[in-house]
Length: 408
Image (cartoon, rainbow, N blue to C red):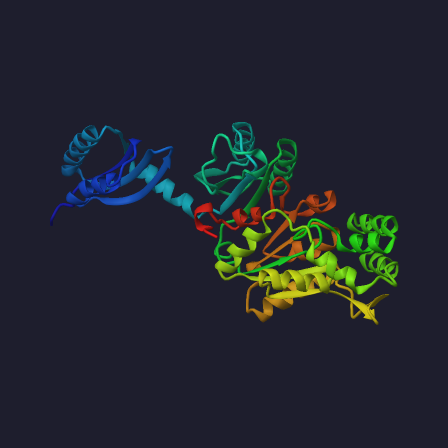
């Protein structure tokens, strides 16, 4: 019987100035001796390469491989380290691959060592292992204005949190204390296949509550704003508050709506967000407790697929103080999200919801990814993800987009 050749597992770690063809040269040497690559990973930080390759080769070739690699790396001016790996170590490592995988995304104007350290300590306490770290945002110029900068880091982690609820709470507290945002998502096929995104409109896509703007023009601004704030805090039923506010608008001229629509303050990042979502084929919906008049304006501006909001009754060019049809409240938003997903033949896990008010919580809770955006405290406390530090285009990073993907 032919005796089976002995083999060795060797991990090579290479660091130094990056240059074109380096990886090709290294793997070419491994190929020369018919080595089997079991794992490979590479990162490039400030033109400095960090490359790791775990390979198996016949024992008789191991010395030749290391000699050729040493000669090659010496001639290129990079450092190489060899680490033998025991078979049982490799077997244990392979057994860990079946564990849950998550993506933790950190987001802010800028991310400091303090923020990263505090976050990774929470991961360590939960016995989660970091497999990789990727920067999603471009390199930040030293003189870039803080008010326009964005910084995002994505951690791929493996394991099962000891206490998921505690970890979520710790991350939330950390984000408030250190002025950053986070998203912790199960890394499954749905995360990479989301196709429908539903937005609230007022104080989400636009930086105002339109009903408050209308109220100011009607001379009832203070009364309506007080009702609006109470409703957004969840203190009174949305339908009741909506009916009371609309009634106060009776007699307002229709021309006021057009003037407000043409001067809507668009939220930071909306232009970029909409362009990227459309470029990559997402279906976009506005599900708003506001008014269709303004939703239709945004629909035309950004080529939005669906708009569901409330219809003001207008007779002889004047608001009557009434509305037409059913009120789009929190419950209705959740129902509409599910309905649109069915029409588009999507699993609910492929949906995203973004909003700021208490009436957005139902759709945030049922969507595959619910994001509270510059939201009220009650909403942030009940949402799994939130964005408070940058514009609404931060949603793109929670979807895994890199700046390099977003050439719009």
